[in-house]
Amino acid sequence: MRVHLIKKQTIQDYVDGHAPGKSSFEIWLTAIQYADWDLPQDIRQTFGSADLLGNGSDRVVFDIGGNHYRLICKYHFGLINVHLFVKWLGTHTEYDELCDHREQYTVNAY
Image (tube, rainbow, N blue to C red; front, top):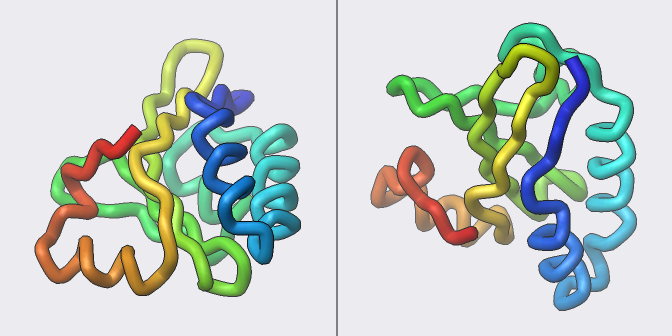
């Protein structure tokens, strides 16, 4: 199934303030355009370093820019599309702070 990214604008706004990561995010966005997923495990075929979070969260963490940035998305496999909702975006250090408080499962910054 094709991936419907919700909200691409969030990523673009973030990139505008973090110019060094721009090309890495562009590569990620291009990969999403061509992704074809039927199961959550298929996400790892497109992004080998993606981490599927447990605890029934339906969330995935993407490593972007050589692990300098992290993107948390919630996924929903519908009938014709996979909906990928941006929940949080930040640096690896900021992500580690989320993990220290186990907020990666519930954060909803966007």
